[in-house]
Amino acid sequence: MCSEPSAAVVETPAARCLLCNVGCPVRIRKGGPDRYLPDSPARDAGYAGLCGRGSVLADLLDHPDRLLNASRCTAGGCQEIGLAAAMQEAAVALEEKGAAPVSGFMETGAVPFSGRAKGTVPFSQRREKGTAPFAAAIIADGNLDLDTLAAAGRLAASVGAAWSVFVPPSDAGLVHGLDAGGSAFIGPEDLADADAILIVGNAYATHPVAAHWVFEARKARPRMPVLVMADASGVTADYATSVFQPRLRSGEAACAVAAILTGQTDALGPESGRTLATWRDRLRGCKSLAIVVGAELDYADARALGTEVARLAAELGAKVCPLTTYGAAWGAVRLAASAGAVPIETILAEAPRTLLVMGVDLDSSLGRAAVGPALDKVVNLIYAGPMVNRTSRRASLMLPAAFPFEVAGRALLGPGREVRFGPLLRPPAGVPTIREILAALGSSADEKGAAPVSGFMETGAVPFSAKGTVPFSQRREKGTAPFADGPGAPGEGLLVAPAQDPFHFADGNLTRSAAWPQIVRPRPVLAMAEIDAQAAGLVDRGRAVVEGPGGSVEVEVAAGSTQRPGQARISAAFAEVRDMFGWTWDGRRPGEPVRARVRKV
Ligand code: SF4
Image 1: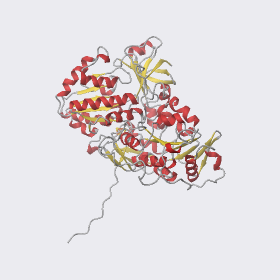
Image 2: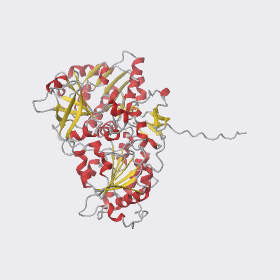
Image 3: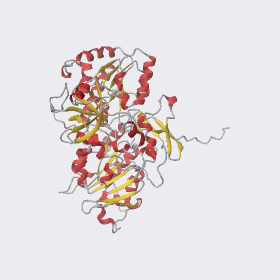
Image 4: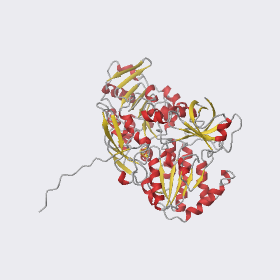
């Protein structure tokens, strides 16, 4: 006789911090009224608590800049409106083909919310002669969960809009470069088993919890090589058995990785070859070699780096541990490729009449020069997201939405690393999730027609070469990338590149009012060589102004002897810093180093 089956125990999966692809489990404990304490529930599984960024999640919950109501905005100011009315306006604007601006018909209330075209029509078939290639477009943040992203793709297909997924250019390039190379991948959790580790990038700063497993490996095998190819002034270099610092130039790190394989170091400068020549021999004999790789510059740089790392890994029998700034970048890039998304710059170049931006502060992420001119031309800019930011301030319609960590979902942290996660807390009453907004705007609930989520998760078999599937193109002309090979000529300025660090989000304005990051690091840091600081009359920990092609920004100087003369790194987490770079789509592209003048305040 069988006993009664016991009631199934349904366990809610842990919430995850997706501020990088370590994807640490996270929970929040309430420590009092309006007081939330971040905590890591999975120390036993090898996770070593949360880093500074993950701890800030708690600061966002009752943030004063939280969007709680929908608003309609004009030059005269913003007026709160009901959420249903706002969604109706948004739905109509997405269907519009070019006559009246979104506010023109809303006064009459004559447009039925349910009036939606049925079926899936590719946007390319709906172009009218003499009009822009697409009248409407959707840009979704790549750190949204996969099912939400798929819903955005389905909505775009159903209303005939173009759509794109935003992931940082360095993440997109790294995913494309590595995914095309057929490497064997591991997550940071597997690094403890390695008997040698090659780290490309400043991993301990960008992904602090990943560093924990490198130290575990080293504890077990104290003599193991940890070879670091990164900025020598970064924290990762401090704990290396050997360091190689490439000159600062887009494509230089890829060139250096290739040199480990080929022994050809002539293109890397006179003193570079000696270090790299010894690395290949040191790595060849290892049984369990891991290559940890992160990218911080532009799309083309990251893609070239990914390609060369995949080649090196194949030759040495190594496993690759990719580190991305967006926790969900891998799945987002694959899904965008399989669901007809177009490059973000294509949408910005066309400046559609209606643009729905979901969860990403485009203006801050890519810098004002790359985004501002296009957003100025959009008639109906609709922003749906959890907080006020520079993009929402430009919007004609604002919809409040839950944070990604207030929603259950799934993400692909890296190849073979699909995670399901639960909500950290529920969103405030009356605030919908982005998936609910998409459903209200007409995204079908099933996967028929467009944007399938399953299918690519396990295989990675997404044709990245297919037209229109690359988030950013690599149009930089040959030979135009500047590099620093010593102090700059008088008046030339320093070559400055963006750098991620654990104290800041990649999305500057998001943290503008968050409490402790402002206290810890009130302004961006500029890491530069002592010799350059002295030449500019600057001292370590002093203040300076960096003047670049897109404007100026005040910084704290971190002068040291390890930074190469002529080049510098600046905290990328501030919107003002990204403005300073003056990135555009036909000049220095987002993420590329630029020449900037540094002077005393
Ligand atoms: S290491 Fe990454 S995932 Fe973990 S807490 Fe920090 S930002 Fe979040």
